[in-house]
Length: 485
Ligand code: 5AD
Ligand code: SF4
Figure (cartoon, protein in one colour):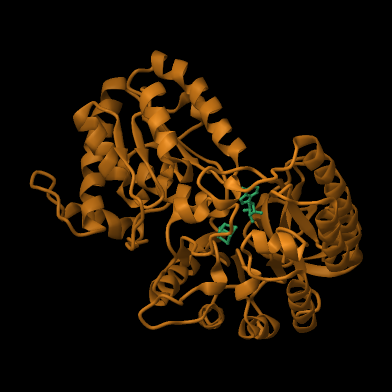
């Protein structure tokens, strides 16, 4: 994104008395300028600034999208504030599991009385859940107080939709089924000044049989490598030292570009950016993780010693039904290869229990992988039936009590191993990127190690954003207490 002065200079050249251009991103700059007028007028009427709150549900992709929403809200003239005092509340929703949807409906119910008290309040909903037609139908019928609804493909249009709502006095709904469009150079408001997510691709083509993501995020689209590099260079110039490259399946980056380029090559290019200290990425699909990538990781000075490699299930039979396109053995071989090339790498994973047809034997295979790989941590999920996915129609859905029992056993195993794995660094000195003041002790700060573990140590907030060497004195299970050396 352009810096503030540059952006304001562009806005000056835009005439909002004429019609909007069709060209993006200028079309959106036009609507940002227009929305600004409305916000300014309302703020003068009320004799105070207008406040906005963008709340994220779900994954890091959504967190990054919310920064784009905040960027636009800020440029329009809103100040950030908590939800209960905000004049504009937007929820960026997730739908990967059913409980994500339930939470959004619950929160919406709480917003209704706030809007009654404060009728000019605007409520927006966007993100993955909005890509489901049943959801939008339900909102249209039973949640009439919502002002703006859009999906995952047209976030860039946020300012335009706000203006449309202000000028029409009606609920605005704009959902695209899919897109091949990637709009660059829109504002965004970063949560941290020293680290940032960077989208490298959107969508997913894998169609794992339980997963709704390909339906709500559309087909795979990779960003132009030059646009990615340019964005990171700007971020670094702005004080960022760590980037997290984001995509549903980063290992298949670049396959659909006009000039195809591998993820490993993209990483090599990013590594060259001076001033950038750390590179992370997620999520990797085991079936697409190439030898070239392993080699690049082994040789890199900047790629962090952490790989998130979702296994989902340890049973080859279930993996096939999940359409994951690897077997338990192939996964374990891959892990061996990675560990050989990057010996001190931290491995984390995602596991689903209770997939349709999962037997106790299948579950034991999952436990076996957990014991063999010895993950640094694992996100464990109870299978959630998502309407429209192949798995939802499969026979032999597993009873709740059986799933719950397996889930508890898995969690115990995962946590016991993670605690052992975490403690091996005790006494070592490692570099931490200081992220924040410690939540529990004002005299301490919290840093993140290359392997993604957190360490708390004495220090002032001036350290935030710096890379410092820390002795890891005491392992506390899933994090460390340490001291700066
Ligand atoms: N039920 C449970 N977990 C799911 N995930 C994706 N879809 C489902 C589902 N239907 C999990 C997977 C994925 C993570 C982001 O969410 O483990 O890796
Ligand atoms: Fe879903 Fe599979 Fe794509 Fe991940 S790779 S987003 S689990 S379909």
